[in-house]
Image (cartoon, rainbow over all chains, first blue to last red):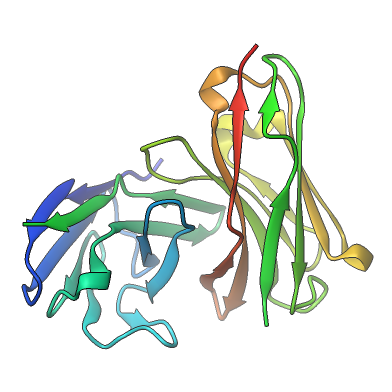
Length: 109
Length: 122
C-alpha cells in the first residue's frame, strides 16, 4: 500500500505569513494528489487537484506543486479564515483507492 | 446546486450492522463520470476512504474493510447506502459521503455531505 507522509503535523503562523506543507508518497504517484482544508465540525473542502490545479472558487493564495513522490502546498499570505487542518490525499484508478495524509493543523502563533 | 446528506443511527452496539444512507441532489449518478464515495474520520484523526460506487454500478472497497462493507445505489431515489457489519468501538467516527466527478482520470471529490457522527458503544 502507498503511504502518504505529511509534514509538519502542526505549525503556528501569523496572518500574512507564507505557509508551506509537504506530502511525501512512498512510491511514484505521478500527480494523483489532492489537497483539502478542514475546519472543526466541517467536511473537508477540495482546494487543489492533481497536485497543482486550483479548484473553482478557491482563492489564488493557495497553490500546489510537485510530482512523483514529493508534493508541496503553499498559502502565500495566510488569512484569518485559513486557520484549519490541511490534508493531502492520493487517489488512484487502477485499482481505485484513496489515501489521506495525517494532516497539518495550522494555528495562531 | 449539488448537495449530499448522510442519515442513519447515531449510536450502534458492538457486533451490530450499521446502515447509512446518502441522499443527494443536483446531479445524476447515472451520468458518465459520476461516483459517490464514503469516507470516515475517527475523532481527531485523518479521513479514511471506505467505498465508492460509480455511474455504471462498479463498486470498490478499501482492502482492510472489504469483507465488512457493502455499497449500493438507488438511482431513482438519488440515494447511496453503505452497510458495515460487525461494528466495533474503533469504528466510531464521523462518516461522510461525497461526490466524485471523474474527468479524464482525475478524481474530483468536489462536494461533501455534512457528515454523521456514529458512536459504537454498548
